[in-house]
Amino acid sequence: MTKSGTCDEKSKSNTADRSRSANTDSSRSGNTDTPARLLQLLSLLQTPREWPGGELAERLDVSRRTVRRDIDRLRELGYPVQATQGAAGGYRLVAGKAMPPLVLDDEEAVAIAVGLRAGAGHAVEGVEEASVRALAKLEHVLPSRLRHRVSALQMATTQLTSGDGPSIAPETLTVMASAVAAQERLRFTYRAKDGIESRRQTEPYRLVSTGRRWYLVAYDLDREDWRTFRVDRVFEPFPTGARFTARELPTGDAAEFLRQSMWRGQQAQTHDFDVSFDASADFIAARLPASLGTVTPQGATRCRVRGTVAGSLDWLAVRLALTDADFTPHAPAELVDVVRELGYRLTRAAR
Image (tube, rainbow, N blue to C red; front, side):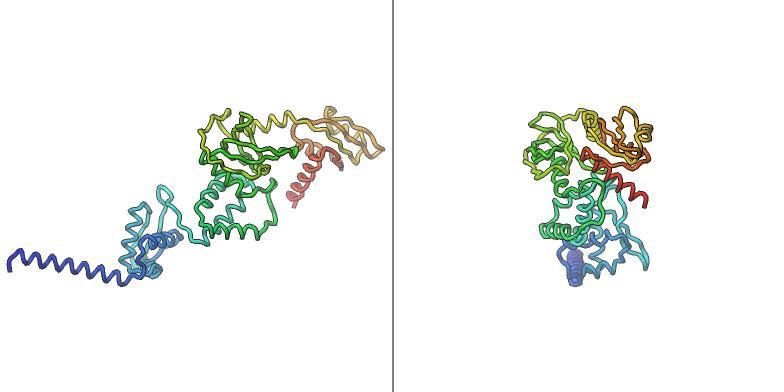
């Protein structure tokens, strides 16, 4: 036999051996859907533990060789999979320079969405804006069957306690957050403090949380000026689909704009108040500034104070409480609410 003929026979033999090896490997594998298998493998590796190769092969219904090839594919895609040698060795996903896409099963996705929705209904200081952005992204990609499960679970449960601020529908926050991120004009109905409702068309700029309430900073197209809107007074938010180029905010920072807006509103706001005390007029007059109002005696152990205060009623409620006398607020109605809320807060602190 010629040398050339010998080489040809060896080449054919090696090809046959590789073919038999591949066929043998495939025969051991019951999971031939490579993309689905890679996602399943990634989901397992994202559990914080070390996975022996044999256990992964059993879970995926493939051979150990297929597991090794799939691990190499994940590494090529940028997932930092670390392997350890020895009888107790295995594979685990370690922290990399960037967070790879998470793979969640149905139960995990529902649990995360419910948790984010529950937290987004109240302003939770420190994580509020990131929570809303994450919720908007998650609900955007959730299959309809899982969205229905999340909504059903949310409707069937209630919280024993809540934050100091008013509750907000998570859907309202996610719609607004999506409009802000996409620079998409937003329409909604807004109920002012006096109860009057109006339709607004805005260019949403940022959502801002004060720890008790959510606010939307936006450019009001009808009024041709920047405005802040309390989100708990927003109804039926609707992204129009019309894109816009973000305008320059006067203060350059949404939180600072809100702070200045709230300060101006407090300075422009005045309240006529009426409060009675279970103490003598002399006792109360000595403990309240004369500029606050007029103290009128109503017997030896009772008096009444009427006056006008500018700015926050929270300050007035605290100032009245510091007189060391029992008192009853009569007007305005907002002062009654503020005193009641302050009482609840102090009672909780005393416990």
